[in-house]
Image (cartoon, rainbow, N blue to C red; front, side, top):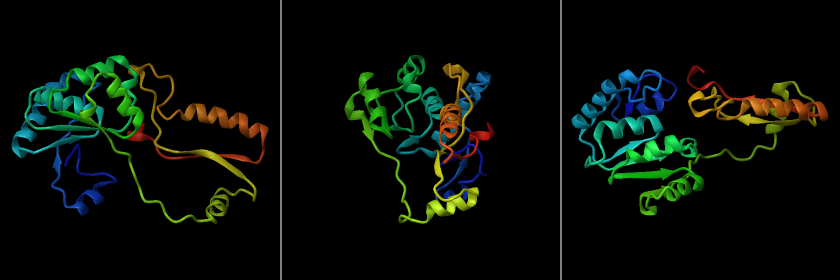
Length: 212
């Protein structure tokens, strides 16, 4: 596993897994494009040293870096596990990603929407797969609502409306005016709803991604 740094919230899980960890930052230098040659060289060296049977990437930026570093005809199969359709919804970034793909590139979408984007972009269905993200949920706790009300200092009958997600700033290079998870719209909508029904309380759970 190549990680940009060997610290962070998930390090305990990685160490417990027994995976061999390599500190190697392969993020696309969007704000510092002059660093791209250095980063692609680092990627080529890592692949050369490890000689993997398969390369798995999870982010658009790291995927583009790998393809630029290795070229279209590299012999090692590459799987891009696509977490979301954002870049596919913008023609420039969709075309950029697909233009760098070679015959040994494959995609695993986390939704049918993502898979359909690739198929509609003329990627062979035999090279696109579907795999939902999963997690084990605890047994239903009928008292969960009461616990939340106590923590929020709310009375019985309070209706909670909100979201649990990372918070992102707008990506200006995608023409966004609000963040990816639309917290700005949620806050505005909650203002309207809470003024109309005093039983409603807004809850936003999460944290800023990458210190945004």
